[in-house]
Image (cartoon, rainbow, N blue to C red):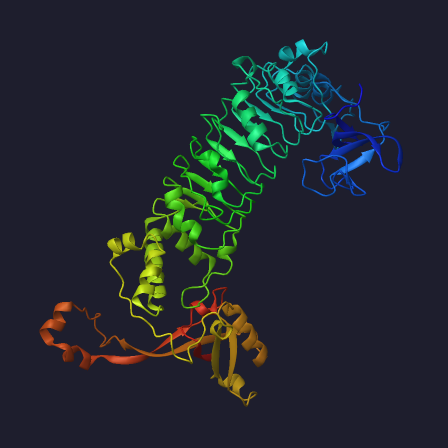
Length: 570
């Protein structure tokens, strides 16, 4: 077969596509310019010594090479040749298997081997990367249906198909085909429409088109419309798409699951094709999504059919995306958001570090219809805690503003403020003065440190340490394990033998204990006896909190920038 543009070849199991045939400057003879399926296999991208010979589909700078036509190319196979080679090769005679002195009996293996050799009853066929071509003039083409009449799942990824017609001509021979994997192929879609129902594969429900580097607007949309109108699931990962814009009848009417992971989308608006579709599950892992829309000039379409969104491993760094999500996806009930920058450096309005768990609470509170977050079911108690926490955070942010107008602007930036106030009541907001010259910048390093004054009280080790009181500073995010480690190192004591007690400096009323049953209190008692009667009998005691060894952050135990901690030996 003569070499031609678009020809698929394989050399030492590395597949490629011919993009150029001709001479190369300062090189004698004829050359083939090929684009490798592996973008790291080549040495350039079609540009050699400053001259552009061809253009690659891949954006890689090392996807192309120049090769002589007379290479020892891998031999191509027909579909049936590959099928027999993988599933019906002759059984190799094996020696009998012995356990001690007894020969093992292989029950049913002979029957299974015979059945496999005849290719009967096979439902799933995987023939990826087997150098398959398909020609309708192949003498064995008519035998495919008889051999594969029960096949429902077919994987023919990474082969040597050059046009979609080859794939269609093969798949129409499989009457029960429901799932088709074409990952890693580099076939072309003709400019002319594939046309009528005679050329469609309406029974295929699942299609995988990952790493095919096809153009969405001009190739994928035509392929879906003309060849796969009955799809329920489309998986198209790693195609470097930046947009999947709406087009006339872009997506099949019955499509329910769309997986576009591993592409190059930067905004949810780039997947506009979902707006007027029936897609219920939208998977967008490992993209670069940071916004709902790229800028204010772009209108944001709504996706009313979407009920499940997977946005893990993207570039979400602000709450703006989640604030607008109820409007963009009004029926969203399942969400997955892990591994986004937003949850790595969370800080409250007053500069305190927040844990990722706090971030998930703030996510739940922003989405009133959400039922699961990161595969975990949201209970009524979790939603209650999340929404109250969010409401208090808004109130805190408002209290730190310098004027009523700025406080109003803060609340306007939280679309759920009004609904949460109606549900739980509007919290009291006491504005904190921020104009003092000695005010601490909440974003400074000093605001993120806690100074602890330690007092050693255990007599078993005080005689070896003349300095029984010292101070040390720790980040708010430091775990109690880290604090114990620092104290233990200073005192030359195993950290877990120490007990740290935070002396809060506050006093709490102590319950009276006269040896009888606990005294019950009722609010009517105060009204009857007056304010002074009960207070006169109350004893006050210092409030102390043990800093329990664990991974919990110091800042979640201690309030403020300074604290006194008593050190005891267990």
